[in-house]
Length: 284
Ligand SMILES: NC(=O)c1ccc[n+]([C@@H]2O[C@H](COP(=O)([O-])OP(=O)(O)OC[C@H]3O[C@@H](n4cnc5c(N)ncnc54)[C@H](OP(=O)(O)O)[C@@H]3O)[C@@H](O)[C@H]2O)c1
Image (cartoon, rainbow, N blue to C red; front, side, top):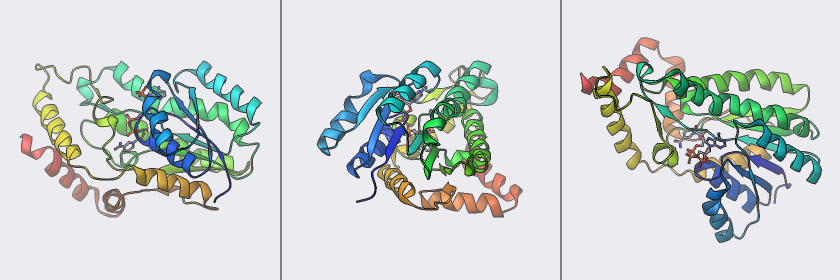
């Protein structure tokens, strides 16, 4: 068995957070699984019970510095340090720019970008206590591509990627590693009950109304057929935690790997022609 690490994870009430938390606990790690609403801890605790593993659940909202501070004090007094921080909490805001309000976009950035910074800022003193500690940021294929109707989400993940890359250089001096996981689409609550839509998404007066509905139907249908296993993200996380010099960018699924290579090496006109053909043409 690998060496036991103390791992703090955000957004563990569902999806990747829940699966990563229970998987790491089953691998013998000390998991501090946090969520913004502890009334939602049922699924996590049930999965932990099924796997016969132990983990600690604590309240943490990434947009609320007080809640982060309480968790930090708890870890400092109970353990004295932290080996791994996994910034996972996030949501996706769908909608064309002109259908989004400034508030819609700010809320997206508050969670997916500033939320990561809030938690990282407060946990860094604990991570710096341990040589070889790691920060793993859950980005997305949308952290290196951009698609119509997801400008707010893509911007939040591109910002997260730039921040992570800079931070990686800065924290080298202190022996703290910064990594990215960039998943494609997986069937989690992010596309269902946790999906967020622009304020004017259903406004029939909007010039984007037809396009929005078409894209939503396309995405809903593609997600319902999605068979990618979210457990792959948990296995990858465990591998990265144990690896001595893990890569900075980690793309778990083949389709996103292909998109990465295509986006990087093909001319932009070709890439954008395909995006337009795939996503917008049927609507014209
Ligand atoms: N699923 C995918 O296809 C996919 C692909 C690429 C990247 N990702 C990324 O993976 C991460 C996890 O998403 P998921 O797919 O597992 O979706 P999910 O099932 O909707 O889980 C998202 C988690 O984030 C939590 N959260 C949202 N806002 C929060 C806040 N302010 N403070 C603390 N927790 C908060 C949610 O809590 P509540 O239950 O309280 O809402 C939930 O626990 C996100 O960063 C997402 O962008 C997902």
